[in-house]
Length: 181
Image (cartoon, rainbow, N blue to C red; front, top):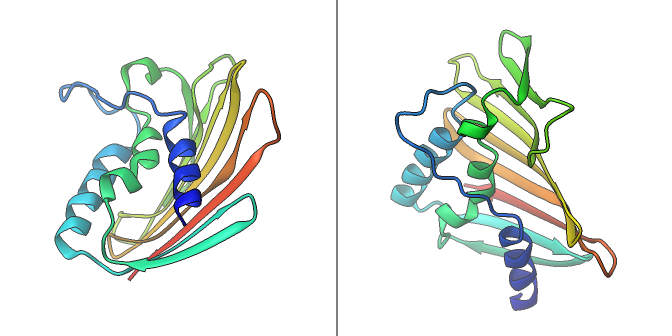
C-alpha cells in the first residue's frame, strides 16, 4: 500500500498549479472551487466511511476508512476550476441542455484544463462533474480524467484516472475510485 500511495502522491503533486485567486475575482465559469470547498467542509464534519481503490500499473489496493484528508483528496478537482485570471477568455461555453453546461479549451490556448462539464440535478445542484487535465512538457506528460458524482448536493463518489510518463520510461497508468458512504 505504501508503494501505491507514494506513486499516487507523485502523480498528484507532479502537476499541481497555484489555485489561489483573489476573492474579488468575478466568476466567469462554474465555481468548481467553491463547490469543492463546500464539500470538503461538509465531509470534515461528517467523517463518512470511504471505500477507496487505487490501481497503479495494474497493482491494486483497497482501503475502507473514515480518515481522509479531504483537502488533499479533492485537490485535483480544485485545480480543474476555471475561474482563474489567466483563464478568463480561454474556454468555449456550450449549453448542452437545461441541466448541462460544458467548457472546452480554445484551440490556441495551452492550459492544463482541457474540458469541464457540469450536469445539474432538478434542484440545480451539481450531480455530475467531469474534467480532463493535460500537461505536457519536455520532462513529462500527464493526463487526468476526473469524474465526481453527488446526490442531494452531497459528494457520493469520484474517480481519477489517467497516466503519467516521464521523458524516459513507459507511461504509468493509474485509477482511483472512491465511494463515499
